[in-house]
Image (cartoon, rainbow, N blue to C red; front, side, top):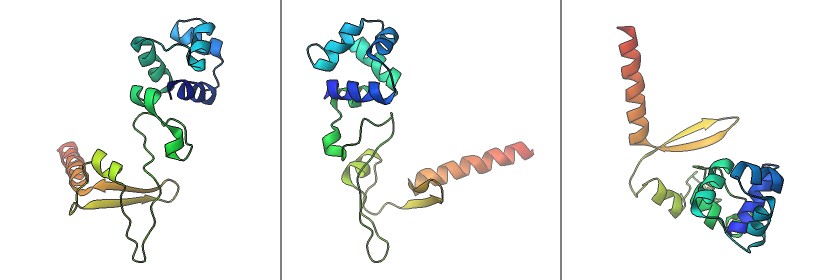
Length: 144
């Protein structure tokens, strides 16, 4: 996993092994050994690699593109939860992994937002209402 993710991320960012080696402070041969799976970097180098590629350390080490439709390691904080089917009345089932990550439980309400150029977003209604309240209070304070 790590070696495959390292290769994919390096190529995605259009770094040569030498470019990446310079950024991490190692030799090109060290990068080649990591990519071949002969050795692995220490934790500090892994953290630095994750920072350079703007991915989580966990995804750098453990992400499996085969189980995610062949999509490479996502940027930090970005998720692809899967494809869902829209029912006859427009209902969808939110994947379990997404429900767990965002603490969405049966009976919770979500706000549906849309942007014709970006798509649809779902927000827990309580988070949305808190944010709306903060914006309203900020606007009131600015008027005073």
